[in-house]
Length: 202
Ligand SMILES: [Zn+2]
Image (cartoon, rainbow, N blue to C red):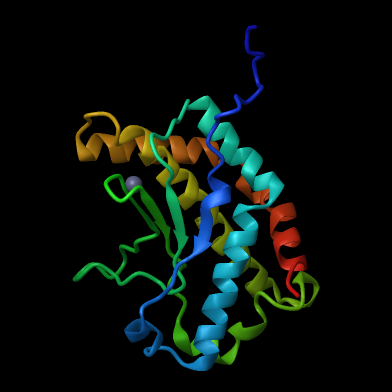
């Protein structure tokens, strides 16, 4: 039997199944107040719901199918609770995600949100639905969502291209180009998944 175009094969990679929240080490947890911890755990849960939303998984499956991405072993996908540190001396370079081929692990980091803002204003961001959020908070929520989904797509593309012997620079340039292509029009298609991920807050 031939395989119909557009039909995913039985063994196609479905990375959303392996998305989980990372376990931060105690030393890192100790650096955050209760409010900050509550905020960043809400953030991580929101990202998991977003990445498991059907509209988003459809997009990710399209990337996997279009790029014919195959995995040789299961890939652990960790949603990190706390932001990555900035690179020393490079304040404006923020780490959004990483892929380690040897560990077969993707890590997705939250955006760096000022602690002051988290304590004073941030606590309702992921709670109580989007109807009550200010325009500014909604924009932040979309920015958070764009970052989570584009980083997921970015790292999934690295899963493919790290299997090849490319220069680091060449691989990164190619991955970024494809990421931009697959994220085209995100301002439109992210609206429904964001609403649904918010409405699942209990
Ligand atoms: Zn990269």
